Image (cartoon, rainbow, N blue to C red):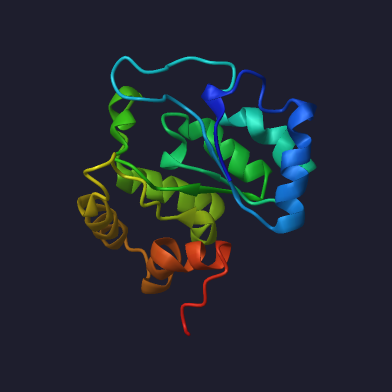
Length: 179
C-alpha cells in the first residue's frame, strides 16, 4: 500500500485512517509512505505531513505493519533515522535519483547515507527501491549500478549487499528466491 503523505488532506496520524492500517496488519501488507518533497522543480516543499516523524505514533500503534520510507527519507535524514531507531517496524528504501541530497547541509552522499542507515538499523531494514524514473522512460539501471558500487566501496559484505539488493524485498513480499 502506498501513501504520499504530503498529498493527504489530513494529518497522517488521524485516527480516521486507522482502519486502513488495521487491514494492512491483518493482511500482512507493507505500507510505503513517501515523505519529503514531492514533484520536480516547482513541486511541493512544505506540508503538515512532510516530516517522517509524523509516522511515529502510527508505527507504534501498528507494530505488526512494516512501514517503508522511500528515498532514504527524501531530505529528512535525521528524522528518518530517529523514526527507524524508535520503531523497529520502519524500514527505508534507496529508490530514486536522490537529487534532494543537493539541498541538505554538508557533503552528504549515497555512501554516507548507507553508512548512517547501516549503523542505525542494520542491513535488514534497508531495501533497494526500483522507483527511479517516470513513464515512458522507465527504470534507470544506472542508480542500481551506482548503489551497488557505493555499497562495495564502503566495505559492505556480500551478505549485506544481497539483503539490501534483493533479500529484504523478497522477505517483505514473500518471494521465494530459492525456488
